[in-house]
Length: 310
Ligand code: NDP
Ligand code: CA
Image (cartoon, rainbow, N blue to C red; front, side, top):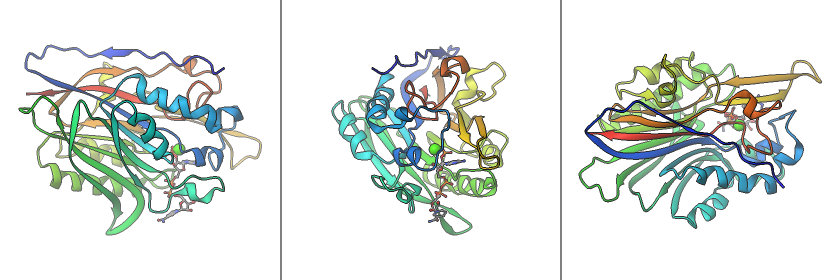
């Protein structure tokens, strides 16, 4: 009964590296918390039935499995047990860390707090260590978290282990300084932890490329680059990773359009992007944009093939 899924192709990056190492396919996706899409999100043009869990649940799993990533980095997970059970059937394991005071708990029919999660394909990678942290601002814990895992590649004992971090920074305008502070804390943490080793940082940063936190990631001593800039000749970010309409707080009955790039897959110089899942056109997303019966979140999934260079 649901309409067909979005068809998205992989852009193939130029490749003339002879010292090719193993390729890791990574997904970054804010899956949209079920409690929030019914609660505070106010997606004014989205058909009500598209937000019903019985219409969303399999669409979420379809999206997670469609491209067979080895690592999945997720935000707004308030249905961890559901995702874990379904991905578990096809060989994934996962780690979840809830936000200290999740806004999901404000809503009547919530199913627990939302948080960040990492899933990994147990036939491709093995987890070496895991760490769940609360991001700090000026020495104080905030309501935002990060899951950090170090992985080895199965059957590739000679390649170094690599670290993957997934985070979801504070939302909304007016919190640019807090996002910068949270991002800087995470960078300092990772710098100490991975030293100069391979690292991938995925997240819903809630910050467009003009924000200070973006500049901080770009300038980090970890040597991070944003994978999706490899989609364009000018090495700029895509035009959007989320596109939605919300009811307006300022003018009752009105609506506000939000079309921006706030989700990223950062990788250290040990990796080279080989393939990147293209961003659908505005036309592909349809007149009312996201979420919809076709696509279950207001954020697009990002998927990148990252090759370890030797
Ligand atoms: P955030 O401000 O980071 O946002 C929570 C969610 O709201 C995000 O998932 C975000 O989605 C979504 N969102 C973004 N923009 C809008 C919008 N315009 N309208 C509706 N939803 C939007 O949450 P906090 O973690 O700061 O939590 C907020 C709630 O938690 C408060 O209502 C309060 O109850 C409590 N709280 C607790 C604090 C604590 O330290 N314990 C501190 C502050 C609040 P996306 O990322 O997709 O944009
Ligand atoms: Ca959201």
